[in-house]
Length: 155
Image (cartoon, rainbow, N blue to C red):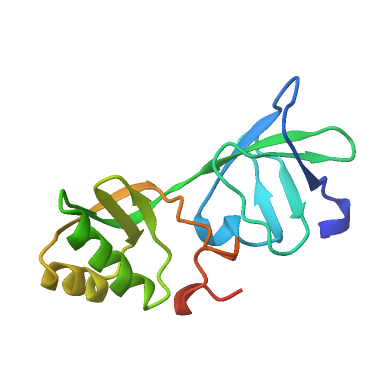
């Protein structure tokens, strides 16, 4: 089946009277502007959006024919560091950011895509690191750039 015969999700919408289906996507999938996916009702559809858009959990995409699909951030293997010390947390953010690592920053917690080398570095700074499966919603960056554009996720 060619992509031209698939329903194409070509626009983001703010609200919908109904949602026809959901699709769970990883960060790597959510930064891509062209993607073939299978929605939760089993249908294959294509995503065709302007480049540079990052899909977030809860975003709604629509086709010209009126199909509406909700994006769900899929659980991914993440490393997580909890810390009550804002200075220590800032140091960890600095060192991870200096390596162009996508970070999810929350009060008292950092998350990044699991990498044992980065885990060891953060432990060396004095933080405890755990590994978990959870949805990943990193910071978009100061210029709204491509979260996840580290060496492992070039697009």
